[in-house]
Amino acid sequence: MPPAFTDVSLRVETDRFGPFVFQMGLKAADLALAQQRVEDAHERFVASPLSQVANRLEREVVVSSVFGTNTIEGGTLTEDETASALALDPRQVQEVEQRRALNIKAAYDLSQAAARTPGWSLTTQFIVDVHRLISHDVPHPDNRPGLLRDNPKSRITYVGDEAHGGRYKPPQYGRDIERLLEALIAWHGELVAAGVPALIRAPLVHLYYEQIHPFWDGNGRVGRVIEATLLQAAGYRYAPFALARHYLANIDTYFTLFNTTRKAAEKGREAPNQAFVEFHLEGMRLTINSLHDRVNRLVAMLLYASNIRRALDEKSINARQYTILSQLLDRGRPLPLDELRRTPWYTSLYLKLNDKTRSRDLRKLREMELACLDTDNALWPGFVAPKNIKPLE
Image (tube, rainbow, N blue to C red; front, side, top):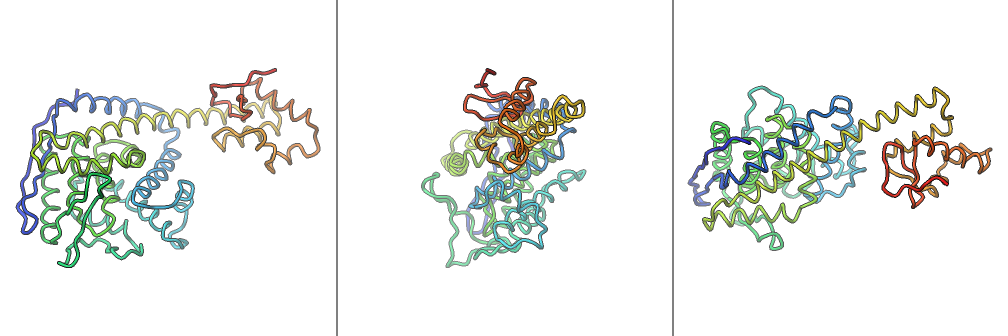
């Protein structure tokens, strides 16, 4: 089981915000099983054939993660549009939404470089650099890259809404924000020294960072990058950024927990941060398991690609059949027969051939189990078996 750890807290007196307390606020024993489940999932994941598909998995995780964290903050690009934006040369960017996506990718690159650096530790400068990258060249009335917030008396910043536990008024005075950010870094160092594992440290830093809310805009994106960097530096692969999709899928819970934990602490309740850390741990477990499934699927795709190429070379299938299977493989999901028969590439394959040849080609692929047809008349690549396979007649 994961080792136990002692509670570490830090009380900071500010000039205008009043006392601010960083505390673990947890029942460590109650988290042991959840930690162990994450560790077990991670061990299985890293033991899988990652090296065979690492580049493909990396690309997919980056796209999915950028889409997830950007959408949480109101980004409008679809996942496919996000992938297209990330493939652009920065000089080709014409739309604000594309710029937002590329900025997050730049912050991810910085995060990964930091996590790979021996002896790296969290600093205020790192946080400022992440924010500068995320907010670079994005038109917004509150876009001030790398500049900590210092509210004039005429301007009050609020965080949250009534639908997610109420509005919260974070520190407003710039010196208080600087002091609290420095204290967060120092407190995190104490957690490290006390042997608190990254699975616990990372969500706690994320939680208190958002309560400080140090920048005018972009705090959510920065907070998730900080959390991911701490996890990556501790040896967790891919999942730290992919976790953004868990937060997006459970966005109401995610937003609400920031308020409920804060209110529980204000009321002096026992273990006020427990729910947020439990939410994080379950997200890590689910994310790692999902990535493990994806690795297995990618490996299956590689084997399938090899098998159909060998079948073509050995003349077990013809060029038309190989083209059909290759298209299914690239698509990665079933293709309804009606839609298949309307595609230009398929039409050209059988332009001078009759329906009997077309049916014979398809039947042979099904007999060889290189493709299968479901009861809805959708064609599947052979490495995926639907539950409702249509039997051969």
